[in-house]
Amino acid sequence: MRGQQFTCQQGLGEIVEAPALISMYTFSPRYDLDRVTGTFTRVGHPLFGEKIAGKILVCPGVQGGIAGGWAFLMMQGRGIGFAGLIFGKVNPVMVQGAAAAGIPIAAGVDDAIFTALENHQLIRLDPKARQVTQI
Amino acid sequence: MLLNDAERAIRDGSRGEAARLSLEQQIVVGDFFGAERFVEVSNVHMMGDYEVMGDAGCDYLKSLLAHGARVCVPTTRNAQCIEYNHAERLRQSPALIEGEKRVRQLLAQLGILLVDTCIGYHSIYTPRLHEHIAWGDTGTVAYANSVLGACTNYESGPAAIAAAITGRTPAYGFHLDECRRANARCIIEAELRDIADWGAVGAVVGERVRGYWNVPLLEIRHGNPSPNDLKHLGASLASYGSLAMYHIMGITPEAPSFEAANGGRELIAEFTVTQADIDAVFARGTPDDGKVNLVVFTAPQLSLVELDRIARVAAGRKIHPGTTLLITTNAMNKVAAEQTGTFAALEAMGATVIEGTCWYLMDPLEMQRQFGWKRVVTNSAKLVNIIKAHGYEPVLRPTDDCVETAITGRLP
Image 1 (cartoon, helix red, strand yellow):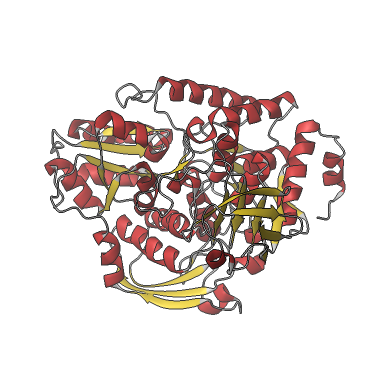
Image 2 (tube, rainbow over the protein chains, first blue to last red; image 1 turned 180 degrees about the vertical axis):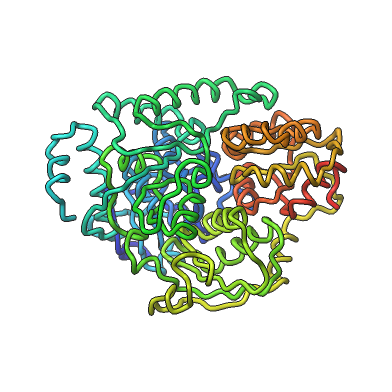
């Protein structure tokens, strides 16, 4: 539904509007992505083959590792990185990495977002207002 | 966040622009997690290699150096992505080799000790109970918090470098007593005999208790873990569950009893891990034809005891001509293995012993293209989880079975 809003509990960075990439899998840049092309390459992943450039990732949680800290920065440097990150639960790496790379990030998003949104729908993330809006 | 006099001075630029910028970045992250203050750290372990940093990471380091950055506490580096002795044989790309050389130079200029190990807690620096540190590499964090009782969050590369420059980190998460208490109780009924069993427990518990802020308490019914077992358990819990801390009742320092480990924290889960649960982890990805052309011992790097075990199981036999056997360790353990004759035995077996790196950091996707590798057998549950991103078909097996697989070219 257009205009539908979802609240978050934590946020960092500036407002961004971009298509959403929805995943019900927990996310790790190292486990899920070819970081040279910015493509989901984990075997069996529902987003397998999807490019991440300019998209806002929406997923319930994270897994693994420290690599996210550099991976976000590297992919931003190559112009193939995420436009934004929205998580249910998050670990420090994603937040530290997003802060270093200048990617807006939010966590503690309403669970309803995972059923309300579809892939590639345009959304606005406002980290300071802790709000996600379907546009 | 409340800043003390020293931190206000850093923010005001008295320790230079790099320290000011680093502190500002730490404040942003601290605010995100509701940290009220900083805590001083005595040691930093950072993860950073060219495979994950790329040119943007190099530019980030150059910018810090241009602003006068220098670490102010002992700081070590995790495993690198190149093994210079075997780079040509493993067909590592010239771009990766050159990039890693640049990263090494930049990190050295910051004052970081290039020890290139993910098991420095065994070989380099062992923090004491309740010591505040800032470590990267998830396995090192899990070991420090759980087995040693030190206090650290996951510190990604840029965050660890910021902590090394300012000498502090925001006090949230595992720097606070309340976050270290167990909120899941796991009875482990399965028999745990091998490193791979402990990794499999990490997979089961990590998947059921997933979430950085959760802390499982394990009650082990059949098993007596060595430090190497705990190394694999922590690495696996971190990999499958993003967990940074666990307790084992009666074994780890903050868990003399359930009550002590739990401290009244609400339990989110209570379950039993059976033999069937562990067997199910081993059954994942088992191929029909049994043929294997790659066996890897890595993730984390191997201790001398683990290296020696492989040599003893091989007992003078050589690996199958169609199979590659890769083993990673750090420089300190390699030297020890050379002194004990273990290294010579592994080389005579036909193993490639790789120093200062971990295989999954070495651009395994490119190796797959170069060598046609697809199926990989390992005793590391962590590697099984990671390597799928590179299109491999991983199979978890106990250590002795991995050795037999390397010798016969087939799964036993």
